[in-house]
Length: 244
Image (cartoon, rainbow, N blue to C red; front, side, top):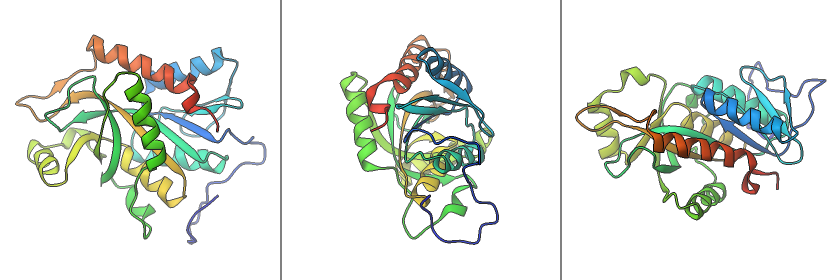
């Protein structure tokens, strides 16, 4: 495992009876999508393995799927364990709330530079700013474009307190920090992967719009649900998400 030298008390390790994983890991953050992803892996001949704080399915020779992983602390622990078991490139599929007036429910965003509003990233600071892999991000951008999804790239702010987002704060983030989306895990995973020298990129589906006069949720929107299911199926099964 690649990491900075430190005096951490607990080090993520491969257990004595734990098998190595394929190099490519997929994190499906939300519970419903994770359940679908794991079922698809099993249907394709894969297996479910024991995994702390989440669930893990392995499509041998292709990839592994982990999730759910809601919130930065759990997401970071899931990523650390994946890395300890041999994963060295990670794709994440999740949702984000839109802060850009140009983004609507059902749109696709490729995560750019993260901005942390959560408490995990602080403990993974290095001399290098946390950021996703340009190579993997470009792969996602091209992949989504080829599917006609018209993706955009932009800065994502991650929070631990979704019920404490104020309109004033979000407007400031959009105006002063060029933030276009809000989630709960992205900045922490970027920080862990930067710390461990692991490639990481994320694709978000816009689930709600946050900057209008009223919050506009889109979780039950038919277009959102259709794209969401399609993206989950693609992440698990398509070649771009297979072991290189």
